[in-house]
Image (cartoon, rainbow over all chains, first blue to last red; front, side, top):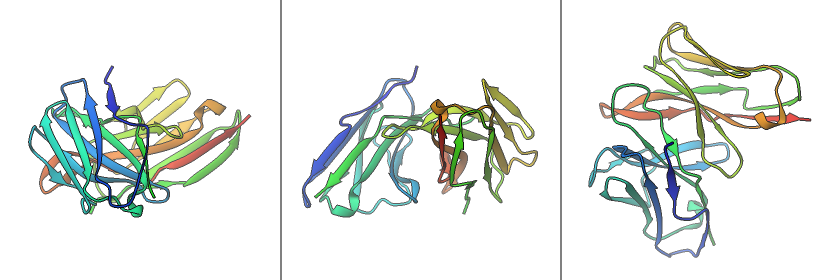
Length: 114
Length: 114
């Protein structure tokens, strides 16, 4: 079974702090994704990566950066956390071959910025 | 821009009832997936449909992909409280000519009361 793990289930940070969210997958997937999920807005793509050291902006990259130094690990960084970044953050991974591009999600990190 | 519209947004039913959830778009998708997400958890893949007109069954859940590959439906027979959750449909989309990303609907929140 694919396993995607995220470093924290719950996180509380103060405005202006630098925040690191870590995601690790164990299925040797090429693709990795970071989403945020808010009521009424659904899942919104922040950044994605198709390969090590590669990153592409999604729909809402402002205020975020990412790092992918190893194939299995994809980190999301909030350079200076703000209250409007309070959200549920979901990491996902997928295989890069042809087919359905199914994504496998981690359990999520509920981030609160005060 | 590719969009997936899900209906209804909310559904509250009694145990034993049948229900259908819809996922519609004006765009053609190569494949479409359905996910279920329980509160506080990440989405879990239920099924992928690839061929127009395809029907897949997963116990009491029946998934159908439209002939034109623009829409899909999820039918649950004799719903149980364990079916409660957010049901998301997702189709493979394009970002700048790159395939591998998914376009997500906003979801249908299902509550099954005992």
